[in-house]
Image (cartoon, rainbow, N blue to C red; front, side):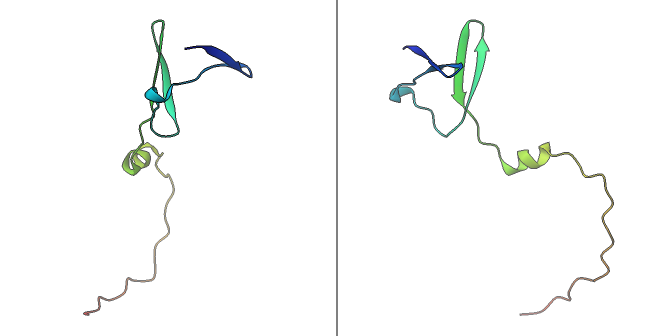
Length: 71
């Protein structure tokens, strides 16, 4: 496998046999090795858990909820 320059970055072409799913990957070093793995798709619950809490008071709702209707 050959390394090449792409602008100011070093790049490597990944053969089809090693193709990763998705459009994003994570790269990390382990000693002298580079490990490339598919980025895990996060769940909506994980995204919501990562959001900072709101620190504001919500206004009172003066309009009561509708009465239940028997269909």
